[in-house]
Image (tube, rainbow, N blue to C red; front, top):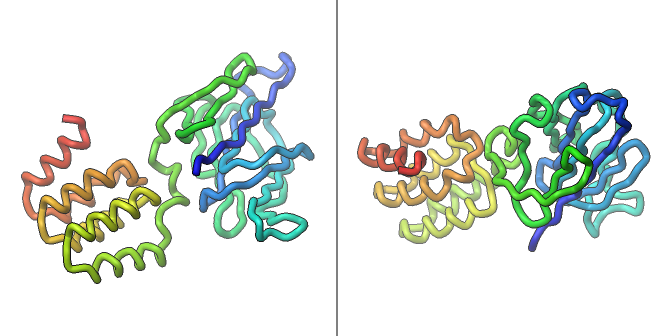
Length: 239
């Protein structure tokens, strides 16, 4: 099922300097759909929301999780005041404790990150909404999307209960398609395999879904031969 994203542009008068505007991106830690009420204005459902040219200062934010099982008042996962500094891109998440958390702060407009997929748009400098399709940079941005401990333990149990590596490869690829992993998690999973070829196949397949790619060196510990590590490094570098 395709997910369509919630897109919002805020346009202010020319008296507000461009460099003093801010950008805010909001998502839920479990990537579920939600709606937003910002400063008493409600916006429709999506699984992420972005606000560009947002004035610095205090804003009132209410985030309501979507779903057929919600109460008549809605499933409010956050309601309160947030403070927006001037001149920054802020990437935030409503975490599992219903707290508003800014996990990345960058200079306004610098290498801005957008989730990929259909219906992804951004607000242009002139205030017009334009289509934008970009690869999502898997880094700190998926901090809250890494497979939870209990789910990861279930996956390890499923892999350890199978005798054939080919079956385990298929199971892991299915899990990788639907989840993000840390380098440490991937290293643990590779240790369930005996053959280097199997480890290489999984490591290559999983690289794009590893959140902390800067720590990918940890995965190399799962290999027995330097030639395997060299092949993996060449794959990552595109050689």
